[in-house]
Length: 283
Image (cartoon, rainbow, N blue to C red; front, side, top):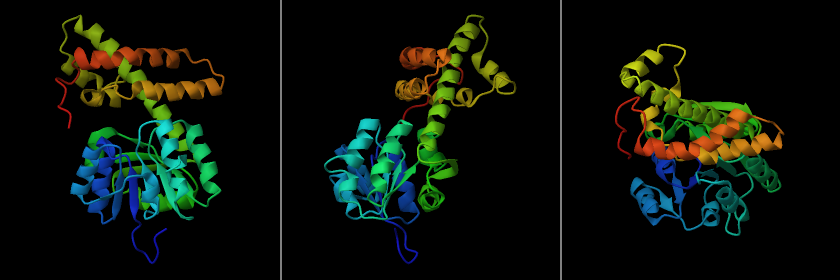
C-alpha cells in the first residue's frame, strides 16, 4: 500500500483492447504504471503511452503494490496469480490484486483464500460497458470484497470507471457480471429473431428501433446493437452454465441461449439485422 498519501504503483497484466485504454487513463491521472502482456506489440503501445513494461507477473510484483488483471480466461487468471512466475510468488504483504477478468465466481474465491494466507487482498472487479466506455473512462466496475479493500480500489478504478457498484463479498462481482451478460445475450438473441421477422414485412428497421426504444421493447442491447459482436458470448454463457449446474437448477432458456450464441457470432458478422445501420469500424 502507498504511504504518506502518495499514489500506488499500479501494474496491469493484460493490456489488450480494454487494458490499454485503462492504463492510459491511470497515467493521465498521475499513476506510475507497469504493464505485462504476451504481445510485444501491446507492450510497445504501453511504453508509448508512458508505462514501464516487464516480462512476467512475478517481476511486476517486485515493484507494484496494486495489480489489475485483464487477461481473458480462468486458466490465465490462475496462471498469472498462482503460477511459478505468478504474482503470489513475489508480492509483498499488504498488496492488492484486482481481478477485472470475467471468470467464474469460484475462481476468484479460490484465489482469495490463497492470497489471504499471504496477507494480500483480492478485489473482485469485473467491468462492463465495453471498449468504447474504456476509451471514454466510463466503465462500470462490479466489485466484491471487504469495504476497506473496495475503498482502496476505488481510487484507482475511478480513473477509468464512471460507476462502481459494490455487490458484496469476493465472488459477488463475478456473479453480477455473469447475470449482466446472461441478460445481454438473451436480449441480443431476441434482437436477431425479432429483426428477421420485422425484415420479412419490409418495415424500416431503424424506424422500428426508434419506436421500440420509446416502449416496453426498449433495451440497452438494442441501443448498442452496432457495437455488439458476440466475441465473448460463448465464454460468458459457459460461466453461467457452470453456475447453473452447481446450483442444480434447470433453466431451459439459459441453456438454449448458450447454444444459440455459437451461431449468433457468425450471423452478426455476415448478415445481421440492421437495427442501427452498418457496423462501425473496429478500433
